[in-house]
Image 1 (cartoon, rainbow over the protein chains, first blue to last red):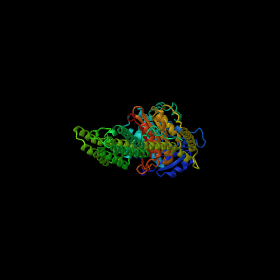
Image 2 (image 1 turned 90 degrees about the vertical axis):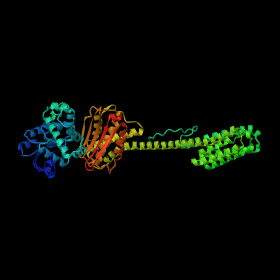
Image 3 (image 1 turned 90 degrees about the horizontal axis):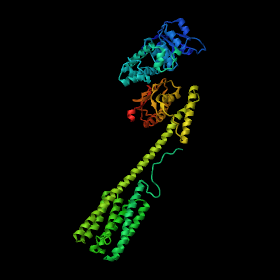
Length: 221
Length: 398
């Protein structure tokens, strides 16, 4: 992630069935310019606004609507345009989140996170990075443990280990005698390699490597 | 009510208790036993020695004074349960000295080293032993013993001219000091033994009391959090359901505690299952549970129970104090190298230097896990969350 308080504003579109999110997000953030918001992925795809990042909620059935794009299908549709998709969700099931990353999402932020975390993630995704949650960091650790990320350096493994346990970059940096920014850069490299791994393997391979039941990822992609 | 186990102690009527007071009684019994032997010897001396005495009335009077003095001292020390009064030593020593000095007047020279005729020697020995037992300082014991020995040696040596008999008298004089010294050393050792025994019992009683208090705290610490949250007038429905489940589980634990039954043995488990079972009681928290790397780590029921309880306690603390937006419970390890469980929250944290860990972390986690060779490490900073790592190393456990 490459964010700080001086980051220039980036153009963002929000796709969320929650009116409060659509209407309120722009008032809560100073570094994200919410240029458009949509209740459905179809409406967004119809308009195709010029934005740096798309915030996408996974569950778009809150209005009682059925049959529309949502979940992994919505991610694949928006990411395929192409847009840089940042998942903004309450969803915590790892197979769902990994399925979304495999479908093309560039990052995940939970709605329980502070607004600063959302801003940082949006800037990182806009800059081409992959942003993952603590839960996904645990899965990256598992994938590495199973030998599927052989290019990780020892330092990257150290940082990954800390992130998988929920440690902040400042804490990891203090423990490894490196700056928080350097720790962030190591993690950016890890998530980049993990993104490459997701894109280069079939859902069946991912399910096997990640210990998911057959069909877990396909159900969401 | 569960009572703490009492320390072992022989307190039947037929046995002297193994306490400091019991040691005093034992010392008294040994002293009186030797003194009784003296009195029995005196009876024999009266039968065999008095006909040979040069002044039978003086001899008999001395015998009577010694017997009465012994009786008085015996009654006093039995009633007190100890022989530690210097005034009794002065009385006993004075009588012994007087008998030793007068012995030359009521015995023939040839009988002065004869036990039946010259009975002042055994009297001097028990008086010197009594000084060794009763007096607290080496200096006063030495002074008393020197006086008794001098009173025995001076008239006896002056009245004895045979070199062999003089040597016997000198050896007897030294023996008086030796008996006093041995009595002093043995009495001091027994008293130290008794004091240490009492101190050990007091320590054991305090440890048992502390352990019992910990058992109550262990039981009630988490339940207090559940009850406090349940008493909130407005409660999120999801949290309320979780709290109700935890209250039911807590009620079972309290019932087991009250009836003295242990918690059911759940058999062999895995580290992953244990961690997940504990963490899933807190789904109201914004929590990530990562146990993929702990799926194949076996865990005995004896270890799983306190580990699960420790995780529950840590998450209770997070729920109550942290105000966290992210909580990560992570477990990883293998059979050969050991394992670790971490509980991290990004909440308000605290400064360990100024805020010592409470009972939950200090005792419920650290002390409860120590017998299972699981170390708990805490790192926290004000405003930067809290991380607790529970670590097991087979090498350190072995």
